[in-house]
Length: 339
Image 1 (cartoon, helix red, strand yellow):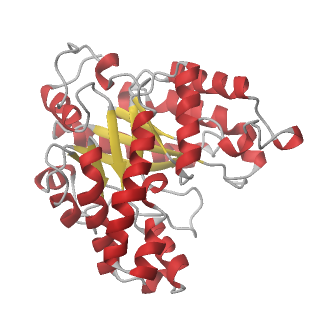
Image 2: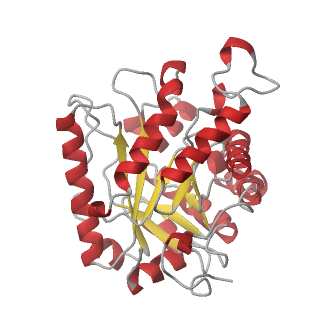
Image 3: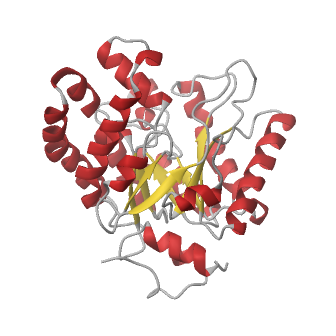
């Protein structure tokens, strides 16, 4: 596959010197409100925007020296983008947060008042869109989603800007965290990857969850009927998903704890999955929300300098087995990279 010069430049900006995307994600909006709500006891709608803005600023300033890039939202994250470390690339989210629960299908939408060009003007090296996707949904719902992704892809092509598509797997009639969905998660992830690697969508990098629910992988702490996959079975699912991807792909943490995400990355590397890095969010900074609410901004900074940095370094240490994003494109290996 080939890639335009503008898209090559954008992807090189968010990767490290090896071509690995070791990026930090804090584009959460409704999810971040819920974390503040849980820590404060206030309803999510009462969480002040200023708290979210200040939290994102601290995360960006303290953690981006250890990341190749940061993913933020233009609603609450532009001041945080300005505080990122020199040399850290910037991805900006283009989708509206959440979805209308009164309409079936978890349908996507784009932010009002923004376009790919406007996100570029705000400093974005790359644009990211999140899509809830189930290959088991009815044809009419998935047709809407396919058309939506095609339109964003075309806009990114016109603006010569890399397009990251974040796929969040689910099933309309199942609990995303339950055993029933865990059984079908491998096929859900794999079929979704196969769909959106098609050239018609114009996607440049896929951001995907790991193809198993780590809570159901057999381990020293989990055995018997509670384990749905042995370690070897889990690795086969990682490899199958990797082989389905004709585009570079990176993993998201899906809200799991730092230790669990690290174990998932170890499994991916052992399986030989050719992933190109991570865009890791809550597994790095989630516990800092309660610190901020309870003890204030200075305590949050102290926590980020200690635990936050430790968390991101723990993830980075698991990227030794990752593969450069440019491996699947017709690009000379010496092209990309920051020192």
